[in-house]
Amino acid sequence: MLNEREIESCYLGQFIPVHYHHNMLMDQNRMHNFKSAIHYAVHPGAKVLELGGGTGVLSWFAASLAEKVYCVEFNPDMVKEARKMLAMNPNGHKVEVIHADAFEYLPPEPVDVVICEMIHVGMLREKQVEVIESFKRRYLARFGGPLPVFMPEAVIMAVQPLQQEYDFEGFYAPIVQFQETTLVYPGTVELAAPSVYSILDFSQPTDTLIAWEGEFLAEKSGMVNALRFITKNILSVVSERSSTIDWLNHYMTLPLEQPVPVKAGDLLQVGFKYRAGGSIPSLQAAIRSNVVPALAPHIAAFA
Image (cartoon, rainbow, N blue to C red):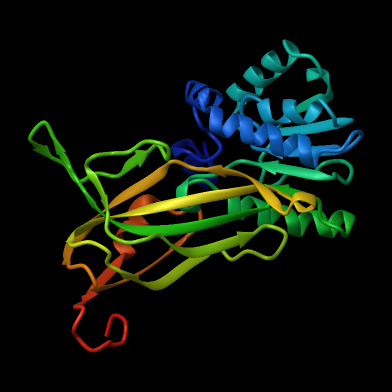
C-alpha cells in the first residue's frame, strides 16, 4: 500500500509519467539554459548530485565535466529509462542512477553542486522548496558545511493583472492556462506592469509559506479577470560578468472567481498566500482583490 507521500507524488511530484518527459526534452529554452548553467557551475573533477533526475539529461550535462554524478529518481519506470538512455550516451557511465526518495537520500560523500528541477510555476504542485530544505538540514548534520552550490540558485516570482479572453468557439470556460513567454496572445490584455511578490534564495533558509499583499496602478481600463504568475529561475550567477543564466517558466494565467472592473489610474490591491508545493486551487481560493478608484482617498488594503 502506498503511503501518503507516494499517493501525493502520483498526482505529479516525483511521479511525472515517462511520456511527459518528452515535452521537457523538446523544450529548447529549458534544455539550453540548464546546459549552459551546468557547464558554468560544474568544474572538472567535481562531485554532483541531482535530486529528481527524470531521464537523467541534466546529470548527463554535468557528467561531461564532473568526476561523479549521483542521479536520484523516485519513479521506478524512470529509473529504468534513465539508465537505458545514459548507457547510449558518452560519459553516461559517470552517472549513477539511484532509486530513492529525494526527501531521504544523501550521497555517500560531500558534493560540489546539487541540481534539483522539481519546479512548477509559482513553486506550486512540485516539492522543490521542501526537498531542498530537507536536504540542507540532513547534509549539514552528516557532512557539516559548507553547503554545495544549488541549481537553480534562486527563484524570482511575479504577478500581473490581466483581462483574459475565455471564449472557445463560443464556449465560455474560465480555466487555468499556461502560455509561452515568447508568444503574443490576442486575447490577453496586460492591465498593469508585473510586481515581484517573492524571491527565494536556496543558499539561505527558505520558508514554504509564500504570502503577499501589493498594489498595481492600472495602466488601461478593462476587466481584471485573471492574474498572470511569472517564475524566473536563476540557474547560475555568473559573478565575473555580473550576469545570470536564467530559465523562465511558461506563464500561468489563473482566472479570478470575482472579476473586478478597473479604469486607467485606479489602484488594484491584491493579496494571497499559499504553501510551496501546494495545489493551484489552494492559491486560487486565497486570492483577494479590491479596487480604489483614481480620485478616491487611499484606504487601507482590504479594509
